[in-house]
Every structure is written in structure tokens, then in C-alpha cells.
Length: 233
Ligand SMILES: Nc1ncnc2c1ncn2[C@@H]1O[C@H](COP(=O)(O)OP(=O)(O)OP(=O)(O)O)[C@@H](O)[C@H]1O
Ligand SMILES: [Mg+2]
Image (cartoon, rainbow, N blue to C red; front, top):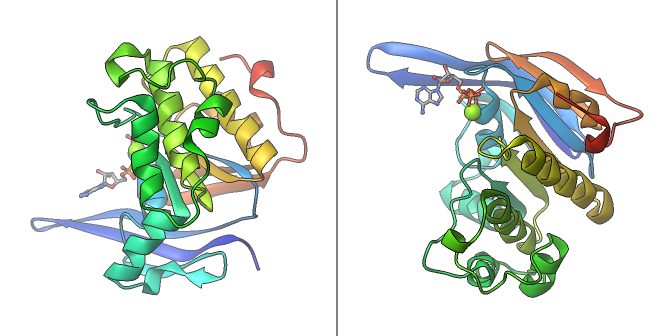
């Protein structure tokens, strides 16, 4: 059995009188430790997939399994625990607490977990050894995203989910962040799922899911994933 599986997952949003079919029959699987790229145009359903996988949204129908556990049948309390203990989330706009230092931001997230990593060490690993006592406003965008990644990793999650993690960054900084995420997946054996609308990034993935109009139009395993340094776009 796969580490993650989506089986015929649908999601319909009701807005007033209108039904919006964000996902219509999404199925795919991911193995433990895979670096997964989810690519597709705006409105395709990428964030909906990630939010359902991360327990921030619920499916209308279908079956979702993560590490042997059926996520779609969890109650509210169980979902809260799932988000808290099993999922690290990284967003486009970092979402750091502005009046806490880098280290304090990471410690805050680690505090609510069973088995967190050493926050200071994780900040070393993401390249912020000398910036731990800086506030977000004193850090560049790329550095703030490193704090956000450290914050997600310090929880020692089963899955690291990233929704357009380089969307607010320039080309070079974005590449550095992608390299950090790819290296982290490889060195920690961490299952990492990254959303992008940039198809040029597909060669990076151990697995690539292409999403279009609420459906998976291709699911490919990549036997020789490229390093991000080898990709230009
Ligand atoms: N909370 C919501 N209420 C109503 N409709 C929604 C909601 N969230 C998403 N949708 C709709 O579902 C569809 C898929 O949205 P989703 O956010 O998953 O797309 P996306 O692929 O992440 O796009 P983008 O690249 O622009 O972030 C879109 O038509 C969107 O308008
Ligand atoms: Mg999105």
C-alpha cells in the first residue's frame, strides 16, 4: 500500500446557488520520502488537493489514506491532531509572527508537538545560523521563507506540504529555496509535496502530478530527477 493515496476524491464548493467542482475524481499515490511536484494552471485545483491532504479542508467524497490512516473519516478533534502532529505547511507569503524572532517563530510551532526537533539546529540547517535573533522584518524574503521551512520541519512532520513556496521570491532566491526543499527531502527521507504553476520544475520531482480542471491529467515517476541547479526557466 502506498504512503499517500487519493482514490476518486471530489470536492464541490457551494457558493450561493452555484456549485463549483474544484476536484472531480482525483486519484494518485505517493511513496514515503518522495519529492512530489504538483503542477497546473491557476484554478486547476492544486491548492484544494494540498489542503485536503493537509487536513485544512475536507473532501466531498472519495478516500484519502496517509501512512495507513484514512484521513477523510477523521472527526474534528482527530483532524486537529493530524494537522498539528503530522503536517508541516509552507505558504507563499511565509506567515511568520512579526513580533517574534526567527528562533521564537520556530519554537512556537515546535511547542505544540510530541516529538519536535531542536529548533536552533533546524535553523542552522536551513542556513540561518547567524540570523536566529532577527525579527521577520529584518530578514529578506528568501530568509523569511527559510524560517517558515524551519518552522514546518521542526515539528518533525510526516509530510511537508508547500503551496507555491517560491511564488513571492525572485528567480535566484526561489531556486535556493527549491534546492533546500529537495535536499531536505533527500537527506531526511521526508515526503515533500510542492505546488507550482511552473512546468519547468517538473524534472525535479521524483513524482510529478499534472492537474487540469479538477483532474489529474498525468502521474509520472521520474527515475532520474534533476537537481534544481540543472534547470533554467
Ligand atoms: N473556498 C472556496 N470556495 C469556493 N470556491 C473555491 C474555494 N476554494 C477554491 N475554490 C475554487 O476551486 C477551484 C480550484 O481552486 P484552487 O485554489 O485549488 O486552484 P489552484 O490550482 O490552487 O489555483 P492557483 O494556482 O490560482 O492557486 C477554483 O475554481 C476556485 O475558484
Ligand atoms: Mg493555489
